[in-house]
Image (tube, rainbow, N blue to C red; front, side):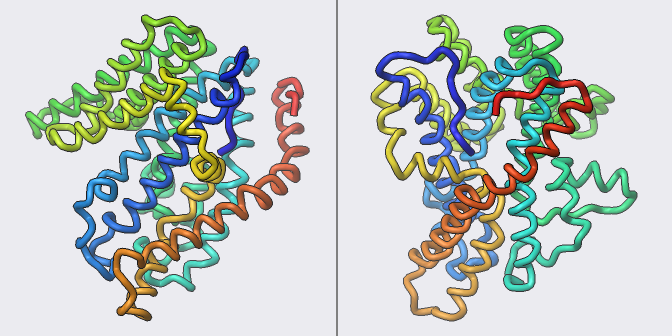
Length: 373
């Protein structure tokens, strides 16, 4: 994921305004990898659940929520640069599709090399959800039979794309400020209905519940909070920070549900993001070279890491049972970081250049002006 430019940024802090988002992405992908390599698959890993309760491993899944916050922040910036909804969706496609295509092919081609994959074997049809950014349940409904996906981690991309469509439509219909209000309202409705389902399992909730679930509106709190943080950061209006914090805290509470420890862990994500947008010293710390690099390669790394990495850990455990168990995930983590680097630095830019003529023709066909490339 390349850093997004902030419009109107100036002054001595400009570099860190650009960098700290990648630093946050670096933290997010790092903790997600630690979760998958130490805690997510205890029945498969050679060390079982030995390290699963270590907080940084056990709560690593919250890195996805941090990605959602970052997306809410960055997408508001992107929307401000777009002419209309079609322009926005086309830009998102060119940003997301090349890496998804490359990583999907790489993962599918490696399936037989890694039979230890948590997701098991894959069919050609399992490429459909990732390449179309449409979740498997929707494809299963359209095709009339259960649909698989080659990487479970793709679920968050399906959520993000739903957010792009909803946020983009709202932004160009009613404006950015009302967009955030509606996203927040949709999230609060989804959270309230989720609580009702928990309290009254047999209670019929009707079409509104089905629509909110289909839209993944339960995650919209993170995106709405990210957009509010962006407005605070860009406009420097102090009253927006409490609003952003309130929505983010509500999202953290919904994530934790009735589990206080998970809510407390989610609140740490809120604290990290709040201090990042509020304090220059934190932005400086987030601009360290390692975090910036992990943030730069985070998108392809996220797409391809889980099954290959876990399968490699299992192989190491079988081939070298004497190897210190706490260190077994390190070689696979370094290997997928290397693969992510290769894709982000060389292959993805090459493919994007090849796709650009097609992208420009598609824009012209639907009547969108050629953007500055």
